[in-house]
Image (tube, rainbow, N blue to C red; front, side, top):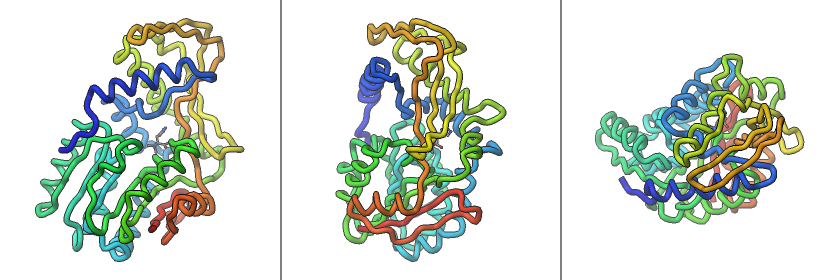
Length: 315
Ligand code: AVJ
């Protein structure tokens, strides 16, 4: 495995993010830090919830379109940004079996990635699996090149980036692409706000736990004393930005000490701290943003219900 990101680098960027986020107005924490072991397990649980449709819908599209993706791209390398457990990748790997030589899963969480990569290598003899521990927002230029690459960014994670960051990210991807490379992006679509809110505020409270878990991450990693029970989960639809926003609302006025940063912060009763945005897209917006980054939309697929999208783009 190649490591562009060490445990030290991660610790440092957590410190920077938490300091900037807790001293900003309004307070924020970036969603990147949801995914410790417990957070990753909670996210897996979310993907199985009745209300949370994106994972199932994306799988449906991949199953239907993987042969088309293989035919259109003839990919020899599959580079997957934010690979996670690699579950969604298996369909692609199978469809690309005819041309694929190398699979490059990229994720910030190195150890988790190494395990997932080993599993995939065992199931695909003849495939070179080269895991890379990296932050795809920082290390794009360092990722392995090669001919006929398919860069996959699935799950709707592109929605976690604020618009300006997203444009920068797409431009960065474009800058690493050769003329025969493709980008495959999974993006959730604008729909009835009621359904959207339910997907991020499920009846069983799993998403609420997932959201609050970021406070335990900060408590553990930065020696903070967040009273996790004193924050409630909020999922709201921001119609102007067409994004779901997850926040943590302070149930009372309280002070929090972050020992590792030598930082004290106060929360007012009812104060909300944003922990995630999850942008929802329309085809036109995706096309425009890809265009602004120097790419053309080659294919745009949705599931039968029109809930989620998969876009294939090329320079
Ligand atoms: C993994 C970023 C795609 O935004 O839908 C799920 C994360 N947050 N429920 C999303 C998430 C709350 C998810 N992504």
